[in-house]
Amino acid sequence: MAGIEMHPDDHNEIGDALEWMRLTYALDYPARPDSWERPEDYPQSWSVRAYIEADILEPDDDTLEVEADAHGRVTVAEAHVYLIPDIGDVNLFDTLDAHSAELSQFAEAFIAAGSEPCQLSIEGGPVLDGDLMIVSWVSVQPRFRGHRAGHQVLKAVLDAIGRSTVVTVLRAAPGLQDGVDEGSAKHRMECRGLAKYWGELGFRPLDGNIMVLTYEDMLVMLEDDDPEDVDIDELRDVPLMQLSQEQRDAVFRNLRTKIDELP
Image (cartoon, rainbow, N blue to C red; front, side):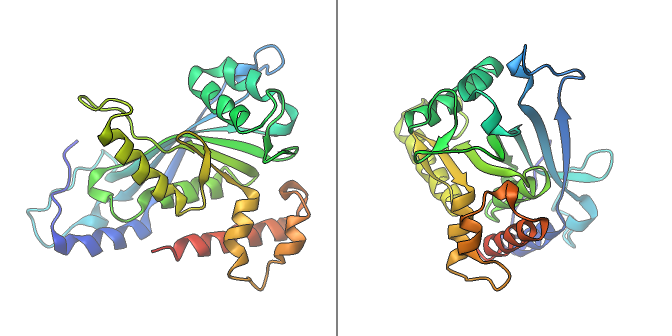
C-alpha cells in the first residue's frame, strides 16, 4: 500500500484527522472451546484495525496521495491482543504455554518477577479477579507516527474489550528487520525508545523488555489529579470486579481524560 508523502504543513492535519479514528475488532475463537481438555482454547485472540475515512484526509494539495481500501478507509494502525478472562481461575503457565511459545514467554516473565507457575501475582499479591490482556503487537503506519496513535489504539482497546482487565502486559521491543540483530546497538536503542513510549501510559518494567500495567497503576495515574467523582482510597481496597458499574465507569472515564492530557 502506498504511503502518504508527509510535509510539515500536514502535521496538524493528520493529528486532527486521528480524532475521527475508528476501530474494528475481529475475534478468532473456537466454536466449541474446551479449556479443561485444551487449555490453549482459553485465550481469546483479537485482531484490531484502526482506520479513518479517506475523505477526512483529503488535502487541498493534490500531490498528497492517500491510498484507501474498497470502503474508502485508510489504515492508521493494527494490533493483536490476547484476552485471558478470569485469570485467577486458570493455571497461568499451563494455559499460556499450551497456546503458543509467544504467550509462554509472558508467563515466564511473570514467574521471573515472582509469580507462582499456577497463579498470577503482582508484587507478591495474587490476582484473583479480572482479566489479563497480552498485547502481542501494535503497529502504526509510518505516516501517522508522531501523534501517539499507538496510545490511542491501546486506550480504545482497553475501553472496548478490556473493561474487566486488571493486568496488561506488552513487549517493548520492535520487530526484527533485515540487518538488525537482537541485542545490537540499534535494537537496544529502539527498545529504550519503546519503553519510554509505553511508560508514558503507566507501563513499568516486569522482566527484560516486557512491561506491565496494573489496575493499581491506573489508580496511581489518577491519584495526583484527585478527581471529584472517584474516591481513590476507597477503590484501592476493592477489587475492580467488585466495583459498581458506576465506579468502574468513573475509573475508566478519568483514566481516558488523564491519557488524553499526555503531551
